[in-house]
Length: 317
Image 1: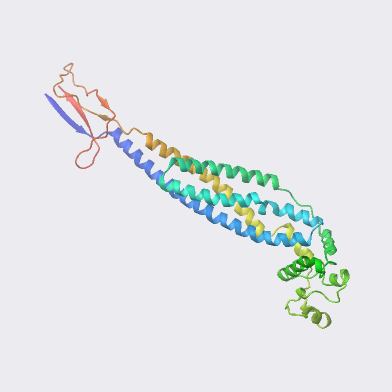
Image 2: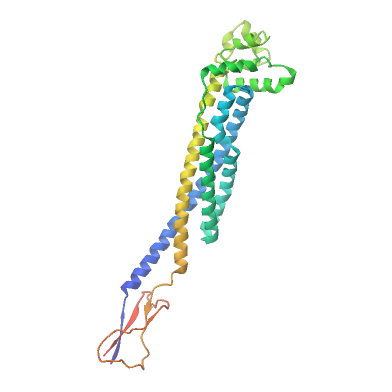
């Protein structure tokens, strides 16, 4: 007598559970990569914006501190932040993040592989650029006196660019002269400071303040302002923090991308769970002993009407 017994397979149940867990893990990895790529866009745009702001002020400082030790110190301090390589890397990182987003959305192995390789190259370039351009500037407060050598050319026809730079710096940083506003009277033939030294600017305000009320002039010199700028500003600290954050995010993104690549590749090459099939009905058993059928097949898993995965075992008697 032949009796067919249907029973649930513990092995197949475990396989299905593992597959569901792998799908949940892939879904979680994709969500994390979406968030990291969004961070890449935001941080890269912030770096470009702050670097552009710093570059504008750096050009002003370099113009005033030309041919002095302050110029060299300013270049050493801000070259890692406004270096063309860093700007190009941030622009490229925005494109790479877009590719990573598309690869994650479509689960495309080729795009994800290119995304991982690009992140690795960008990380190596950033690390090498940071190590190569890092140097501690050696500048002292006494070096500020050298700025006075740029004052005699103020107001001359062929030095209009220098005049404009002095006026811009004194207006934006609310300072006058190098140490004190009297530096203009000492280093030039002017009888009063420029109008850009006034706290409330209007034509002839410096002359009026010089003869009537000196409190209308900025009392602090521009030398300490330039010295503080060279030693580092809050914007420079923000750039350094963003640089470190981008590096950490790149390491995390590369780790998640490798994990996602492995999960997608394993999912595509997984042959699926094994099933047990019964022999043909006309085939007689080789002995009278009861034993399970020995035919194994790598076919798809059979299911009953309720969707529960089962396999068939033949009992021969």
